[in-house]
Amino acid sequence: MKSKLSFILALSMLSGLLFLSGCAGNGKEDVTTPYAVTDDVNGSGGTGVKTNEQMLGFASEDNGGSKFVILQNNASDLPEDLYAETTNGNRLNDATYARLLAAEEYLGIKFEFRLEPGQWNSKMPDMIYNDVASNSESSFDLVNMGLNTGIMGGLVGIYLNVNEMESVDLSHEWWVSQIAEDASVAGKLICLVGDINRSTYGYMGCVFANLEVSETYRLGVDYYKLVKDREWTVDKFLELTKAVAHDEDGDLAISPDKDIFGWANVGIGSRVMWSCADVNLISKDDAGNYNWVEALDDKALTFIDKLYRASRQNNVFYFGSILGDNGGIKPFADNRCLFLTFLVYTAQKLTEMESQYAMLPMPMFDFNQSDYISANMSAFDAVFFPANVKSDDLSGKVAEFLGWYGRETIIPEYYDVSLKFQYNNVDKNVEMLDLIRARLRMTSNELFGTVGNGIGLTAMTLANTADSGFYSQPVSVWKGKVSQLRKTLESYMQEYEE
Image (cartoon, rainbow, N blue to C red):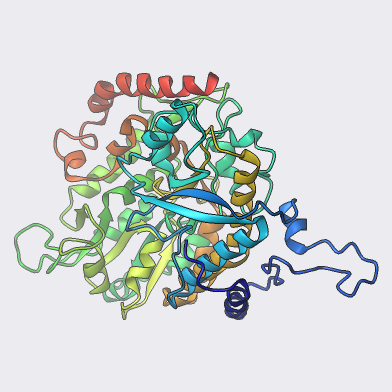
């Protein structure tokens, strides 16, 4: 990477970022400067332990400026999670760049990035496999790619077991412990998820509610109160969608550029809704292995029926993209749509919307659900370590440093400043964003549903909601697919036992 700025300049810039973040009310002590000393500043006999050393659990070291190669997902719709080539005046980019400089200084290394597509159908796992199979030293010291990419590769042995890496401490607050627990199988964990990546929080599912449309149709709903009173359920959500419909051109079908309708749903928006309603097609056995359920239970069938009935109404519009002429952003921003279901980062695409909107968690299945669940769509970035890295100790320390620095600076800048105040236009959404983040977990649907892509059945696409699709004939469609899905996932789970 280009090191055009001195480390001192990076810290100066970082200081300004921290001031602005502090103004947003995060109330945290400045512990981001890599050499901030907690005591004995004047040689008065204290321990002289540096703040980051206390938090990280390891001291700075000099690795002689050795090259540290990161294979990085550069998918265009993901935030630049780890990579920033230089400063460009964008605060998040500049904070990301400052983090790289700080890590280089603290660990005595030099970063080099290899940028590759890292979401669906990526070749990144193949590149890692070829390296490991060659019995040579890995070309990469750390890999940052879509979680589904790493799992869809169908390989476990090409990655280090994070649970056995001595320099990685999963109890640190910058790792999402629930995801680490859910993703561990037979004591093995091949991915690391947390504040190292912005997309961890940008890819959480949510519902955007257009408050002007709600008022125009006299719905009389306080969405924030619904959430707080635990009345924000799937039934309530679908009930409200029915109340908003106007076929402007009289063609008995939703025209996204003309009509008014209740629900604009990206296909994977409903897919994440399954997880948030705690309706899972994958179960975990007593031995900790995951597998597809043999048959759909009453809860799943009820949930499918509710969504299918909604899809047959002429006030719900389904689409495959968030943007474009047939996307969901424009009708929602133009006050022709009540609900938009997708992911939290969509707020950045609504910054020019004049009308106010609520940002809400995905609805609960019903009142019996113990709490709201925030599920990620599994394309968010996660960290993987090739099994033949040059030094698992150094690779783990780099991940820890980047995760810690992300926790202290980049995630507050993204989540507490950008999402809550720059992109958001209603004060009450701040509390909702806190609730969504606090309930974050990885459900089995998204975690291993990409193996064989059985999770694709839950997306509300035209094919899945057609007369012969999964939503219209769930029992027969599932019966026809589950046998092969189970074989595929069982084969993958067996790799954890080897």
